[in-house]
Image 1: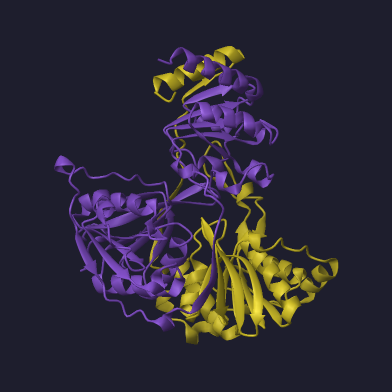
Image 2 (image 1 turned 60 degrees about the vertical axis):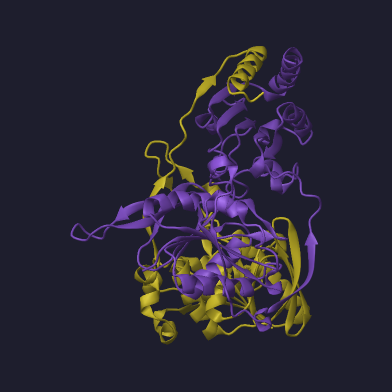
Length: 347
Length: 263
């Protein structure tokens, strides 16, 4: 019988991506209900599986790894082969992938190869009872909830018969929660090398060149606080005002789609259905009307402050504190106010 | 070179609105369009054809009304259009959809298959890679640039979050297109007139059944099913302060930040 929950970890340059640990923690939470174990699958070049402490801390009971030079940089076929072989050999109940540009390339191909279903970009995973009729003993299934229609509707998807039940989850959606072992010791877990049949001929493309994009700016997904500008800020120059505010609050700058499309700010700053999903402690929406597509990317923020001229703007429906007023007057005054506040509270 | 572009007809989700009373989706009057990424795929196919010659076939799976999308693709300059449509195909998830489209593609023949990265209604990005798996050909997804190196090899720029790869891939292969791949050209008047004269061939279940297992397509053959769908519950609104002077507004914000230790 299929059992256990697997997370396919993602590494770039042997650095394990944060989403992998978020998924392991989520798998741990699910495993409390199913009574199963959590395993991570890690593929990469030699040495990638050297230090696995973070996997165990995030909640993995074990790590199954394959080290091969063919797995140094991600390409579709070698990774598909290795992951499919492991899944066929281990027969898990549930498999999770990050909905990154690697995960969204790999997961569908693996699903098609091992003949099972896959639900993309889940925002909520739950284990609940399901039975086709009252006479049948209920079984525990993975209820996978995801947005569709640009975030306008949510759908809960089930994969009733095929195994594993597979889902991709966007970075930033699930929360990493580390296990604190006694006396700060690293929790222990198993480590198993998997013998894959991967061979050179499986590499069916040639990577001619890997070009790293310029210095990575801070990723808005990881920001503790975000000052976000919408169409209502009026001009690209207004972002410098928002930046000044952001510095005072140790925040980063983000944006709605309109300003990105207008070329006022880089695309990697975009929050929303077609941008990034963020959940900072503070999200300050300045001149953002609150289209459903935008709200889909920020509604899980801990505390939302919205400033907008239009009293009926939809952003007020998700704001903890809504200020109806002209941001061009309020924000410069807020900057002054915060400077004064900081001056007074300096000790 | 024979290039087949797979497109999807989608509702323009930017136009989708919620009924404020029933909180349900208002679908009436929402225009149907060719999915954005797919349209960039058409553009890339037409450019490749201009460079090296060949034929561009456009394929769409969907109901009869999807012929509008196919005619738009013809008017942009595609040579031939095929509609994959049958009652047996209805309710297919991505796994089943990929099986059907792969069967159609085997019948049509291809050197290069281009799909969009993802559709704006479902947002899954799964059908492209799953078609490639069914055809047993390499895929390169998230493509933002492509050129022909020689008659059997393409050089493709593949995007990741923090890098891009320049990848050499042999045909036959499948690419999934990002909108960055090219601004789609407009239809020409001559193209539109001709598009409506042209026959759109329908590929139905009868035509593909030798290559399809009925147990793996349609609603029944799909591994995943929608259990329920619902409109998102809005997070409850907090305090909304109107008619404050700017100074009062600033005080309210600073107080809130202070209470939550955000400053």
